[in-house]
Length: 467
Image (tube, rainbow, N blue to C red; front, side, top):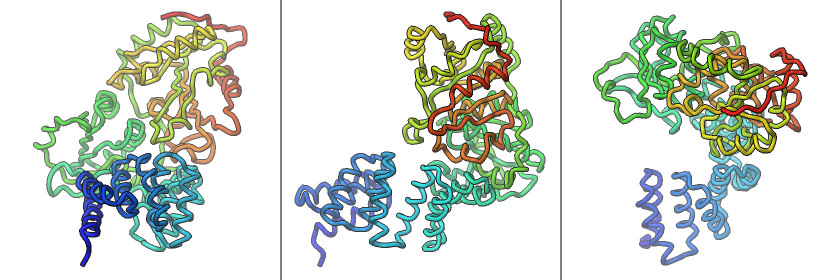
C-alpha cells in the first residue's frame, strides 16, 4: 500500500497536469516540510513553476533534484528552465544528458529543435524536429519548430503547415470561436468569416496584408484586432468590418453575431502565401491624410532629410538584447550629416535622448503624440511623411513596410524567423532592405547608403535643434 507521501506526490502530479498549480504546490510543500531532500517533490514543485514561466525558481529546484536523482525527465525540464532563462548553451548541455539516458525522449528532441530555432539554425532544428516526429508523429511542438525552421528557409508550404500545428496548443494561438458551433475555417469560399488578430502588433500588421485575398474569394469579413490598429485598418481595408476589442473585456458586440466560420489571422498565410510568388509585396496601409498634413507642416520646419529611427524592440522573452541598441551604439549612423532624426520609440526615451544630445550635440526628436500614442494612426501618419525609416526588428518595420516607406531594418545575426530569409529583402514588403549584422554592425555602410539614396551632399549639415 502506498504511503501518504507517495499518494500526495501522485495527486500533485495530476494537479500539475491539470494546471492546478497552487494545489500541487501545497501538497509538494507538505512533503518537503517532512523530507527536504525528496527529489520527486522538488521535481514536481519545479514543474509547477515551469508552468507559470517562473524559470529561475524552477531552475534552482531542478538543479537540486537532478543531484539527488538524475532522471531523464529532470534533465529535460532543467533544459526547459534554462531555455526560459535564455541560457541556451547550458540548456543544450542538459538536454544532451536527457537524450543520453533516452535517445527517443520526444520532449528533449523537441526542445533541441527549439534551441536551434532560437539560434537561427534551421537545418539543425529540422533534424531534431524530424527525430521527434519519428517517435511521435502527432507531437505538435516538433511540427511547430519544424514550421518555424522551414519558414526561415523560405519553404512556406511546410512552414505554414507547422505554424498551423500550434492551433489550440499554444497560448499564442488560442482557439476562441465567436459563438458555439462556429467551425474553424479550412479555406472554403463565400462565407461570413470572423478573423481574430493574434500575437504582437507586427504580426497583426504583416498578416493583414492577406485580407484582400479573402475579399477576392467572396468572403464577408469581420476582423477583431488590437484596438491600436482599428482606425488604420478601417481606412486601409474599407470593405472589411474591424472591431478593436481583441484584448478588451467589452466584447458584447460579438455575442449578437453569427458567422459561418472563424480563424486566426495567421492562418490566412497557410492558404494564400504558399510560395514566394504569392507575396505581392505592395503597400496596403493608408495613413490618415489629415494627420499627414499636420506632420508635414511640422517636418518642413526642420532642416535636411527626415529619417525615423527605432532602436529597441521586443521583450526579454523575445531576445530583446539581440535586437536592440543604445543611441550611443548607433553613433556612427546618427552623426550622418544632412539628416534630422525622428524617434519612433513606443516607450518614452526622453532621458536617453537628452543625455545623447548633451554628449554629442545630435538631436533626436521625439513626439509622444505619435510614437507613444495608443492609436497607431498617429504613428502611421508621421511615418508616411518621413523620407526614410531605420529600425530594429520591431513593429515599426511592419508599419513602415505596409505603408511602402523606404525602410532599413537592422537585423541581428540570430534573428526571429521572419527576418532569416536569404537575401536582403522580405517578400512581404518590397520597400524594405535588411541590414544584417556580421561580425560587427555595418552602421557606417548604412550611413553612406542613406546619404546616397537620399541625395545628401557632404556639405549639408544639420545643426542641433530643440523642440
